[in-house]
Amino acid sequence: MKENWRVWDKDKEYGDLFYKRAIGELPEMESSKSLAKKVNEIIQENDRILDVGCGAGHYLRSLDKIIKTNFSYTGIDQTAYYIERAKEAFSLKVNSNSLRSKTDFKVGDIFNIPVDDNKSDIVICNNVFLHLPSIQKPLEELIRVSKKYIIIRTLIGASSFRIKQVEQPESYDLNGEPINYHYYNIYSEGYIQELLENISFKMDFSFEDDLDYDPSAFGNSDNFVGKRPDDLTTSINGIQLNIYILQPWKFLIIEKK
Ligand SMILES: C[S@@+](CC[C@H](N)C(=O)[O-])C[C@H]1O[C@@H](n2cnc3c(N)ncnc32)[C@H](O)[C@@H]1O
Image 1 (cartoon, protein in one colour):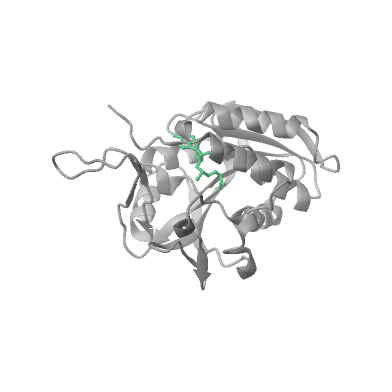
Image 2 (cartoon, rainbow, N blue to C red):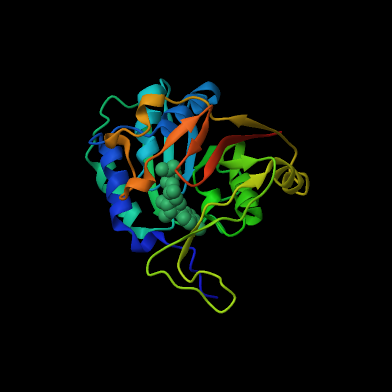
């Protein structure tokens, strides 16, 4: 099967941008700061954090800043170039005040995470689910490898939407489906709840709006991810507006029992 939705191998620049965030040349992302606060509320001494879809490990910078207890961190991403950049960033020892005992980065697929069952205490997965063609297996995988908590940041609303951003070169098949595209899917709370209820682990879960952001960071060219003016972004009551799509960011927080 041709997997057109996997766009990251073609986008080295995106990995370079993550690298700059990882080494402090660019500011931390707002989502990285708010995620780190959430992890800080639950982390215990010597916990193992697993970051799935870690890019260049740039969330580790925010975790290092806020967490005042010893922890280890493993970052997994399917894009080999991003993992190379992550290794480079964190071998520079930019975070010399960190209480981290161990850091590891490896290439791996969220559909088949190369980690044993219950191996990590806190599993994080940020801004990845919206870009996947399906989330059932990824959700099962994140829960399988976690011993205690799973925190997922993605687009969650009252209804589900399948959204494809059409990429260049722009062309369509005979059914009108784009050949090159990038998913921005929104899932309903109800669908996610149904998936969780069919997973055979005991757990509690909640959905939390991501309202913890600095409005001045949006539209600020230092924090600006896009290459085109229409990638500029703003936020209204926690719902991000990237010109075309209202993005209802939420955290799904799962606690295994
Ligand atoms: C939008 S970026 C998010 C990166 C980072 N977590 C953040 O929030 O900035 C999506 C990341 O997911 C990774 N990714 C995409 N599909 C994946 C898969 N099947 N398994 C693991 N990682 C994947 C991409 O390589 C990319 O680094």
